Length: 139
Image (cartoon, rainbow, N blue to C red):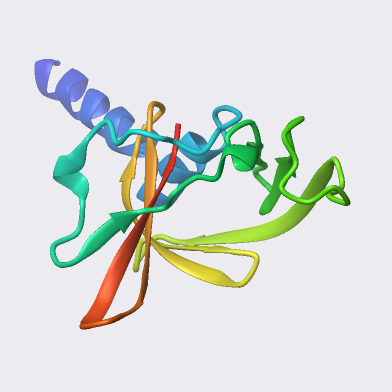
C-alpha cells in the first residue's frame, strides 16, 4: 500500500510539472512591467562587454503588458519622447524555450533571468572592438 501511495504521488508530481516555456510565459504575463533602472541580480549578466539600456526619462513611465496570445501592449506614460506618440502600441512577441530567445516585434533577444521581480533580456550588437551585450530590464 505504501508503494502505491508513493507511486501515485510521484505520478501526480510529474504530471503537474509545467514545462519551462509555460513557466516563462507565466512570469511574463503575470503583471504589467516597467523598464528597470537598477539591476536586482548582476549574477545573471552575460560574460564579455556589456552595458545597460539607458532608459530615457520619457520611457520611464511606459508600461508593458505581455498577453498569453503572443501580443505585447505598450502603454506610453505622460512623459512623451515624441509629441505625436499614440497612447498605446500593440506588437507581437514569441518565446523559444530551446534557445531562450525572446522575439519582440521582429527583434531577437536572449533571456538570462526571469522571475516575478525582474525579467532580463540581452541584445548583442556590434561594438567598437567586437560585440557588446545591451542588457534590458523589466521590473
